[in-house]
Amino acid sequence: MAKTIYEIMHKDRLAAKISDIGECRIYYSSFMPYNLYLEESNAIEDMINNVTNFYYWCAARLLTLDRQYAKEILNSIGMMQAVTDKDRAKIALSYHCTSLTDVFWVRIHGEKINFSDINLFENHLSNSFIDIALRGKQYTVQNESLARDLSTNGCFPKAWQRTQTGFRLLKDGGNDAVERELLASRICRCFAVNQVFYEKDYFDNEKVSVSNSITSKEYSIVSMEAFEIYAANHGTDIKKYVISLDKYNYYMMNIVDYLVGNTDRHWGNWGFLIKNTNNRPVRLHDLMDFNQAFHVYENLNGANCQTAFGRKMTQKEAAVEAVKKIGINQINDVEKNCFGELPQFYDMFCRRLELLKTLV
Image (cartoon, rainbow, N blue to C red):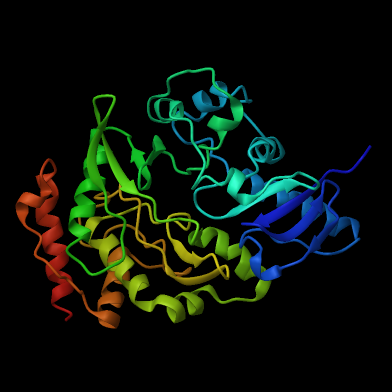
């Protein structure tokens, strides 16, 4: 049986080749995906690892099955509801593993196709996906045009929508989750930190939050979860790397997350902004995902900090450490009317802010 050889592409640059039995050739190691590790080796164990790692990477470019309406989405494109990494990889490979988070993609050796033919920044997305992703409606649609939209991770209903100026992300999850994200975004704007701006809109007569994409053909994002794979295979100390690259925005993230009670800053929800010309980080990417804000918000300590690099700290302790390093950097007052439909959180926000101000 003939081998299938996959070409891992960074825009139109051939970064590596891998066969379906694990033989690989790396052409540009500096242009490899951060969360894909391959070995140029004929050892059976290394080849097996290569295939496993490749399928895992492909599968990660698809939605996670804990996302609401995931089964409906997979049903709508005629795919299985419960899938292995290999099965999920096949779905991603059917649309060349394209994504709106970066400029990597995959083609089979010999395919006459270029980045300009398939990248999602320039090519059409099926608008029918929006109804499926946000409302779970069932449609029979063409597999490729829909499946390309399945690369938005998370557990809340969400969908990309193309506009004349780029893409925007629509997020649902119910009125409460939407209001929490909108309130957190209003508060964040009162502090000097790189952030995604969330605005209110409506889809199918229901409230959603919308934000513009922070990626493009020029810039990608890499989650800390993905970078951890790179760090483990290259002897990189993640904490030292982050502090060296972008100390300010790292500490501001801990301050803001404490003030708004964000309990969802796992390692898939923060990471690096990557310059595509050299595939290297330039800073931490803009803060995003606040629909889990104002949880564990009954006291000053908050939840456990998820960004402390393995140290056991509360969000309060992480914020205190951050203020001592860089200050608060508040640029506008947060007025009570800012809290809109969620006035019950105003008093605790004020208490947390005053606590941090005593350190300045």
